[in-house]
Length: 92
Image (cartoon, rainbow, N blue to C red; front, top):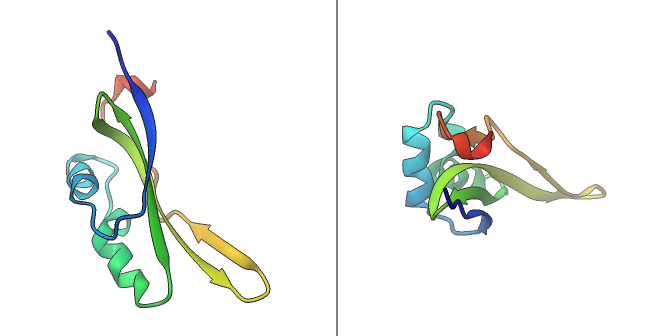
């Protein structure tokens, strides 16, 4: 089997493909959705998503929320992640 595993970085505010992946994943959580990132943006947070794809299909990843804190610099966190495809043999 010829798997093409890639790690992608996405800075898009809306990410329907990622949100669809989360809705079909047993480990998906609303705090990983692009809608949650929109809500956190109101409090000064930015977001990016790291996704792992196999043959162009998302099999895992995480949304990272980050912001700059005075005197500390840039900080980030991953809430309720990372999320993995429930039965992905590509990640084992």
